[in-house]
Image 1 (spheres, rainbow, N blue to C red):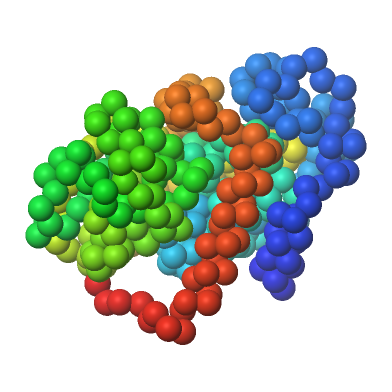
Image 2: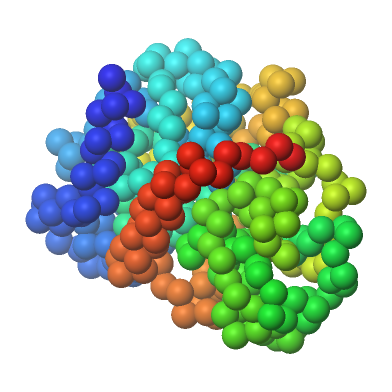
Length: 349
């Protein structure tokens, strides 16, 4: 029932932002890049908690969602030990909500129906600016939090050895707001002799896993993908490493952020943070999530600075207009996939 209600709410919210959130926005001395519904008086670049206790929320059920960079149903199973832990640790029932698009996930938090979320690296900035998300953790291992690189992959049996070999070819980007799947390539590639949309045709695949599978099947000549997603797919046996060759890699970026809604009661928010940091992934979860076994503290101000720099370099602000455009692209892509599904059954890896 919760999942049905959330899905309907997200679809409605994407069509029209919640006007009451802006109408009730308090007087604010500083917002920075945040939407008018939020305030950033302490200038840490994320929404402040409401000062009025009446505007602080203490839900009886906590709703958690993870970024749809891969099959949402897969993540629902992988995160089950963690949502069970949150239920025990907070004393509040915690449910997993499957989202199929970044825009829907951002909208769910903005509308108040999503309390805790793992946002993909690029869309984290939309969640912060437009939905009041407060990133506080990144998954990692014993030595520190996980990072990923942008990896340009091609088939191993292809003739492509360098980026410039891809001129005139079909290259899959994931989505317009993706850091690793679109923005970072647009920031880095021109200086390396390859300009997206000019030197090659950009085809939006809709996700990192779809880009990898498309290169595997020969639908695309190459694809820039997040190395952590690519490596997890290899680890699960979805594709074979020897099928591919990586012809370029970037410097590291932080992986998905884990964020809280800004307006949770402060005591509850602090309890949730502590529950994250106390949790150690069980064996199956550690294997499924690239060997990571815990959550590490992180902040949007410090740890997302490289991501914001990439967006600035390609003039891709994380604002309402850019979000609306990406939401429209995601809806159109999903509709195309639905229409094509009966004629194009999925290929085996």
